Amino acid sequence: MLEKFRRAKEAEIHVLRQMAADETLPKPLSMQRPSLRRALLSRGPGAVIAEYKRASPSKGLINAAWTPRQAAEGYARAGAAALSVLTEEVHFQGSLDFLPVMAEPGLPVLRKDFLLHPLQVLQTAATPASALLLIARMLTLAELEAMLVACRDHGLEAVVEVFDTTDLAKAKAAAASIIQVNNRDLDKLTTGLRISEELIEHRASGEVWISASGMHSAEDMRRMQGVGYDGLLIGTRLMQETDPGIALTKLLEEMNGA
Ligand SMILES: O=C(O)c1ccccc1NCC(=O)[C@H](O)[C@H](O)COP(=O)(O)O
Image (cartoon, rainbow, N blue to C red; front, top):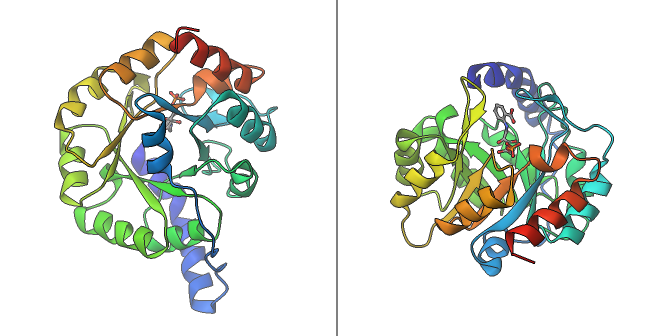
């Protein structure tokens, strides 16, 4: 699955290389980006990162009717601590153009894509995203370190995603400070929260941890909050509703026992 995503990115990276050579790459925005780390830590464990995802490999088309503007406003109103936006076009029907709209309410925005080259970090810095996703399994340790340096140079936070202890060892060797455990099995496209429970035992002080994928209920959210996750990243459960903002309001009320 990850190899398929890598191939889909090759042409895009080629174009970015050409733009860099022609000096036509958009310039990084000089702006104060709201911090994802701070937004999660200030809410205490269980802060929600609400995702805008129109389609996915596991579900096909999920929701093409809800616009990025409705998502940004609806999720912010519902009490999301941060927003996650799929920008990958081929498999998730995402777009880089969603980022400025999603950043308008002022919440930190995480760019979710398959990012393999420092020029993609530069490309992200030309948007108002606060953070971007790096998938440990798709990068060698040296590549991951180079991507983290590029993020620091451009004032972006990096969320390093892991699926198992091997990925986690790589993330820690690269000194990643925001670690995201993905609960999705990429071969079977099934989800299960057990891996989040197992991996958080390796948490070190100063690290921010996010559990991502496969949370379907307030009970699932409380389970991840209970083992100490700072952030809970939720996509499908919200996007499959006609109004994902209202769905998040209800889930948060239920989670907090209101
Ligand atoms: O969502 C998928 O089907 C998927 C398949 C293969 C690789 C990545 C995939 N999703 C990216 C994500 O990280 C999720 O969108 C995110 O964690 C939210 O998951 P969920 O709440 O289960 O939609």
